[in-house]
Amino acid sequence: MPQKPTIPDPTGEISTKTKSVKRNHSAITMFNLLGLTSDPQLEILVFLFLFISYTLSLIENLTIILLILGDSHLKTAMYFFLQNFSFLEIALTTACVPTYLYIISSGNKAISIKACFSQIFFIVLFGAAEYFLLAVMSYDHCVAICKPLHYVTIMNSRVCRNLILSFWVSGLLIILPPLGLSLNLEFFDFVIDHFFCDAFPILKNSCSDTWFIEQLVIFGGVLTFLMILVCVVLSYIYIVRMVLRLPSAQQMKKPFSTCSSYMIVASIAYGSCFFVYIKPSAKYELAINNKDVSVFIVSVAPLLNPFIYTLRNKQVKQSFHYTLKRLVLLSKKF
Image (cartoon, rainbow, N blue to C red; front, side):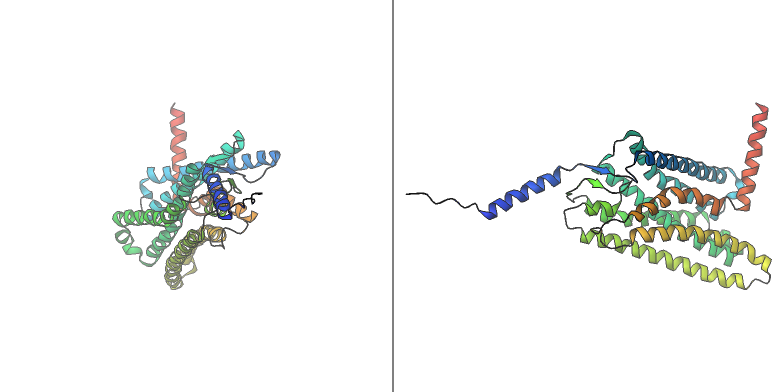
């Protein structure tokens, strides 16, 4: 009597496939960064551009830090915050650019998952801290212009230290919850269409449900943006009201000059961040424009900001010229 053919159990087959897929997902321990271009000749130009801009931004921001450290006339709260701003510019660009320069020069585009998440941690921490610092600097401008006689008392060293501590803590609160949840994600693809590890391109590669993490990232970004916006807008409402009360146009010139420089830097920082991070679900295709904006954030902005904001400052220029004269005199002695 012929035996009936055995019909495979669909549940068991699907279960086996699911286990196999999960094993494949969990086997991914490295990501592959596609970078900005796959054209070898264009990569050389990208390397030169990033290397030169990175080197110049390091020189500019280190110069500002050393000038403020070495000049006793630059010991007010404003220069203390500018010094921290320059440090954050160096830290942010260093977290991104050297890794990509190494990838281009070596041809090895692989990066471990641990290294990738570490890079995300430092990029978001330094970036968030920088945006909070810009809000603190708007408050500093407000006190300097609206309460000039009480400025030193209000913005004393203890207050400045507490404000610095607060923006570092704020940066940690922004990054730790979504990053902690992301450590348990499984991935179906190891290719990241970016030149550094960024949150949304990585979430796009996850086979896990990332909806909650995405909403957490967007909520944190929107909340941060609104808090900073309120602080900056209120500070500048008070500043404009105070400046308009000044009797002459000559007296208005200095505060408006300082504020215009700040607004250019703040607009570049907040506008770029809003364009990249306040966006729909990461499951949608990543636009190429995001990479262009990211290059601007981590490479071009740290190069331009010292010229826009600090090196135009009269006291900083005087300190720079004085330091150069001292160096020339010392070189002549030797």
